[in-house]
Amino acid sequence: MGSLLIYINSAAQDNSSVEIAVMADKPDRTYQTGETPHFTIEIKCRNTIDRINYELGQEKQIPAKKGEIRMVHNSAAFDGISLDEPGFITLRLWFNLEGKVYEKKLNTAFSPEKIKPVTPLPDDFFIFWESLKAESDTVPLDAHTELWREKSTDKLNVYLADFRNYRNRSRMYGVLCIPKKEGKYPVLLRLPGSGIHSYTGDTVMANKGVITFEIGIHGIPVNLDNSVYSALSSGALNSYRYADLDNRDRYYFNRVYMGCYRAISFLTSLPEFDGKNVIVYGRSQGGALSIVTAALHPRVNLVVAYFPALCDLHGYLHHRGGGWPHLFSEDTPFTNTPEKIKTAPYFDVVNFAQFVRARGYYCFGYNDFVCPPTSIYSAFNMIKSDKYLNLQMDTGHAVYPELWKISDRWIMENLK
Image (cartoon, rainbow, N blue to C red):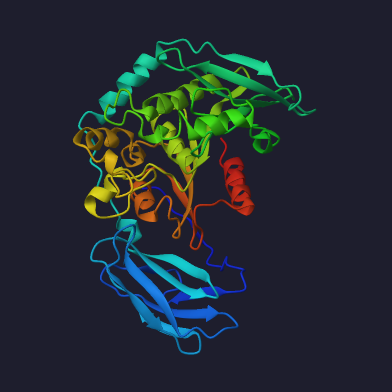
C-alpha cells in the first residue's frame, strides 16, 4: 500500500471587506459517516445582518435543507446534516447588502478515504487499451523539431515539435525545451488543462535540468495567433469534450489519450534522455491526462496531478457529484443516452487509476466545485502505488505559485 503524506492549509482566502466566515467544530471539516457537523457563522461587516440564506445537501445534488438562519450580532450557530455513506456535503450561504449578493460555499467530508467509484470497470477495459497501444506502436512517430530562436536562451534550446498520432494522419504539437549543456536529462511531459490555447513551454523545470515537452491536445500548432484559438473555442472545438461520446473508437479523448501515450515514446527516443526518469504533470484536464498516461505507458515513474478531471463520470447517475465535464448531470441532458453511458467508463480516470505504477504527487482542495472532491477521491483511493497528497482544505479550482514550487521540489527529490 502506498504511503500518504497530508499537508493541511486552512487559512482564509477571502480578503474582501465583507466576509462570511464559517468554522466547523472539526477544524479539518472531516467527519465519519453518521456524524453531524456543527458550524459557527460570522459575518464580518460594518452593517448589521439579521438573516442569512442557506442551502445544504450532498455535493452537486438538490439541497436537502434550505431556508434562513437568524443572526445575532452577525453570528449564528448552525447544525449540518450527516451522510450514511462516504462523500461530501455542500453548505451555501448568501445575503444581499446594498444591492450586492455576498456568498460563501464550502464542502465538508465524510470518511473521504473510503469513497469508492460508482463508474463500472468494463470487462474488456484492459484489452481495449492494450490493443490501441499495440496498434499505435506500429505507426512511425515521424517527429519534427524546429528551433524556436526567439524563445531559446543561453541555457535552453526551445523547439516547436510535432509527431504523428496513431490514426488518420493527425499530429500532436507542443513546445520542447532541452538544456544546452551536454549531458543526459530526465524528461517531463506537461499536459494541458481544458480549452484551446497557445503554449510557450515549461522553461522553469527545463532550467532545473529537465527536458520538458508541453503539448496541446487538439492536433493544431501551439504558436498560432490567439484569434485562431478564440475562433476554435467558440466554433468547431466549442464542445470537444462531448464529441462522439457514443462510440469508444471515435470519442474525442480516444485520440487524445493515445497522443499522450505517444508523447512519452517521443520523449524517451531523444538522445538526451537519461534512460530512467519519465514524469507526467498537469492540472484539471491535465491532471486527468497525467494519471491516464502514467497508467498507459510503463516508462512513466513520476506523476504530478492537480485536481484531476474526468473522474467517476457516472457519479450523477448515482445521485452524487461526477467529475468535469459533468456528463449525465442536469446541465448536460444530451449525454444521458445508453451509448454514451456505456462509452464513458473506457475514458474514466477511476478505471485507469488502479493501473498506475508510478510514484505520485496529488493536490486538490475540498472547495473545488469544478472537479468535486467526491470524484477526485474516488480515483485517488484506487491508486495503489506510492502517493503523496497535498490537501489544501480551502482551495478551489486553482493552483497558487507556492504549490507549483512544492511539486517541482518533490519531482527533483524523487528523481532516480
